[in-house]
Image (cartoon, rainbow, N blue to C red; front, top):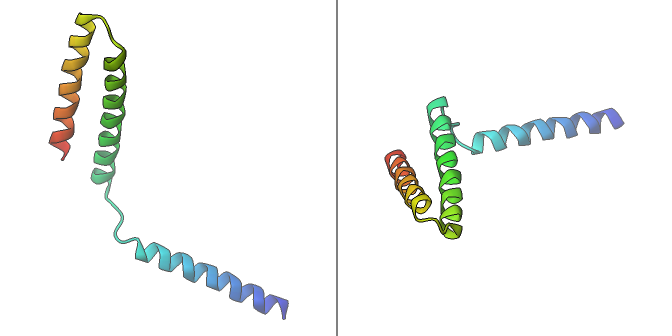
Amino acid sequence: MARGWESKSVQDQIDSAASRQASRGPQPGPDEIARQRKRESLLLHRTRVLRDLESCTEPRYRKTLSEGLSYLEAQLAALG
C-alpha cells in the first residue's frame, strides 16, 4: 500500500513539473539568449560607469566616462 502512494506522489510530481514547463511558453533560442546576456552586460557596465561618474573629480577622466556612457547607451538602444 505504501508503494501505491509513493508511485502516485511521484507521478503527481512529474505531471506538475510537465505542466509548469508547458505553461512557461516557448523557450528563447540561442540568438535571443545571447542578446539578453549582452544587454545585461551592457547594463552592468552602464551602472559602473554611472557610479564612477558620480565620484569622479578629474575632468579628463570624467570626459572619458561620459563618452563611454554615451557609447553604452547607443549600444543598448541598438539592442532595443
